[in-house]
Image 1 (tube, rainbow, N blue to C red):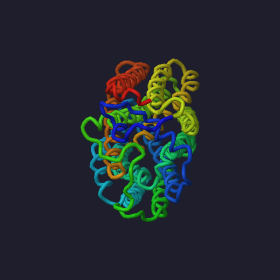
Image 2: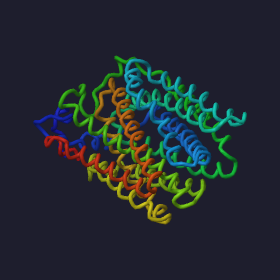
Image 3: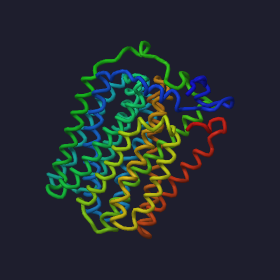
Image 4: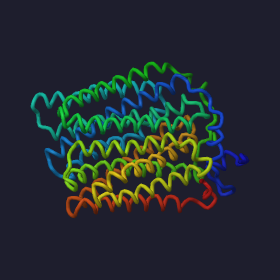
Amino acid sequence: MTTTTPPAQMLGTRTAPIDARVPLVEALATPPTGGRAERLLLPATFVTSLGNGIQLVASAILVFTTAGSALSVGWLFIAASVPPALLSLVFGRIADRYDRRTLCLIADVASALAAIVLPVWLLLGGATTPVAYLVSFALAALAAMFMPASNALMKERVAPGRLVRFSAQYEIALQAGNLLSAAVGGFAIHLFGPTPLFFFNGATFLLSALAMYLIGRGPARAERARPAAIGNGTPTGRNAAPLLRLGLLYATCTVLTMVGNTVLIVLVYQGFHQGAGTYGLVDALAGVGFVTAAALYPRLPARFGHLRIAVIGIVGCAVIVALEPLHLSVLLAGIPIAGALVGLARVATRSLLLASVPERRAGQVFGATNAAGLGLSAVITVLVAAIADHTNIANAFYSLAIVTAVITAITTVTLPKSNSKIV
């Protein structure tokens, strides 16, 4: 493969096509050894994902069994989506101005304190639903600080030659936490109730804070400036278009996972008349597919290209989503495939974003991407939850599949012809 495309053209111009595979795949060929930051960022991601997954599953089941409607669960996910959607861009800009490790530490410690409010309230006999919404809102607001700061910290501390490999490892850590949280959470709630799991979530935030502390201080901002793997300038005007579209594709992956979690709870409980154990199994199977896909991902871009993998992953997942309401056996057979497809799409879009964004603007870009994904998720959650409550749960799945497939198709088709070879 050739590498003659200039960096500025790789960010998108009318004069030459982008081949996003080239710098990313060549970076995989001889990756340097990961350092302390990389070794600690991954376990911090894992434990945070584990705790957050258990918190969300436990809260969703608690709210659904109390209120008994799809929209009540939808509002819980909205409470967890609105603060990041509104604040991620602001916190992303802050992460580009202040020390990102310190911001992560603050977010972790504050989240640990917020997480124990709900179990303490339950032990005191307080009303469940309002406090579950409030705690979810507070944790989401703190996540709005943590997400862009931690992603920018990855861009800052991980060597450019390891970005694609680290992106896959990051998604493995993230989804391994989700996998265990669904399995452990579903069965533990069935056996012990939700209260002990909320305390456990607080402990995971403290473990993440410890990992962030052990990473140590980084070099001064001026000393760590370096060219990005794709381009080294600030994308503006026409040059920003490919980055925006990559961000929208990554946001669509967020929609599939977040809205899918909402309607899956209703499908398992109301559609198939199952309980927490079955829901834990479904989430575990999705996690197995996701982790497997992320582990295999570094071998795929040289043959298929990152963007092509992302588009096929999202559209393929949408097709599986449309089939899942047919029968419980279809759901159990299809959910690992859906997890694998969306996993491939997330790693592909994350890899391109990490490699493309300048380090000094990483917080802002990932903050904006997070805001877009969560904002879309909130809107689509209300839509599909209302459809589920007023018609049936199958129509909610069809709606989610159609919306995500259409967004992906429009985003890809509207790429300028000069950028059509981002494959």
